[in-house]
Length: 117
Image (cartoon, rainbow, N blue to C red; front, side):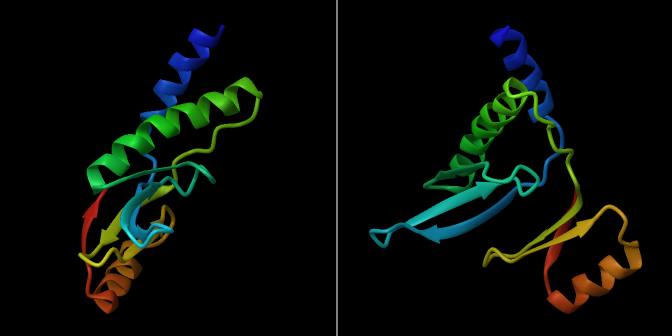
């Protein structure tokens, strides 16, 4: 049964969840990158690089979803259609129902570049 749940969790984790990556400071004053999926509250990964944080988030997302499945809880759906980031880790998120012209206006006001997902 656990194997089936793990496979289902792996499949669900491949959905296009929004990935937020920010640089944070450790308790010792060092730098660490933290990646999260806001739709999956409490699910995050961290690493010395953005890439490592995102890889760790992928594993954490699978474990997180598997835990929800084991407890017969609903797995949240992905929510984001656009992500805007800058070199200083600023991020704008747009909901699926926000008109594209409004997204463009907010983007221009923010001075960020973006990648549509």
